[in-house]
Amino acid sequence: MKPEKKENLSPTNLVLTQNQKESILKFENKTDEEVWTAFDRGNELAFNYIYRIHVKSMFRYGSQITCDTGLIQDCVQNIFIQLRDKRGSLSTVHNIKGYLFKCLQREIIRKLKKDSKLGKDGLDQNETYFPVTLSHETVLIHQEKDEEFRQKVKTALNELTARQRQAILLLYEEGMSYKEIAETMEFSEVKSARKIIYRALAALKCILKK
Image (cartoon, rainbow, N blue to C red):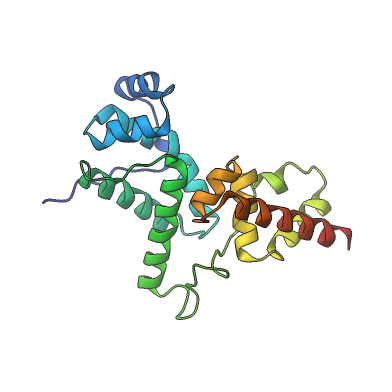
């Protein structure tokens, strides 16, 4: 099959067409499972809806893993091309954002590994891997007006474990619930997400008191 022409997926170019507006109106009150099922059955409006609703947050999430915007763009468009190719055989998805984030993180890791940008030992996806590069727009930092305190928060976040940092960003940057965080981080139980958040917040509190 001839590869589809890659669209410029930069969030700054996301101007809604009439067709895309229709997709939002049609699916905005549907559950994620309903939207995903429609997409899997070949509904192009459902595909447009998923893309338009989630692509900006995918770029934001990707920018916390790598500052290479070109790599993020390639990974995002590869994911949507692959999903389109697999329509009709996709598994049920209850949380589209979490699913796309998992796909994106794996795709970025795969690309970084291929390009040897992390070195041989930099690709542990379990406890140590999540090389967050905190952007200036990071909510936890940007919402603070005092520059000195912003720097302190940034330093404190970087002192957390990789998984704690990931969980905190999913909670505060993406507004995910504990259940959604558990699914995104592939925990078997929701209480594991609660536990890692509580420990991360406790650690942050201790660090900021220093």
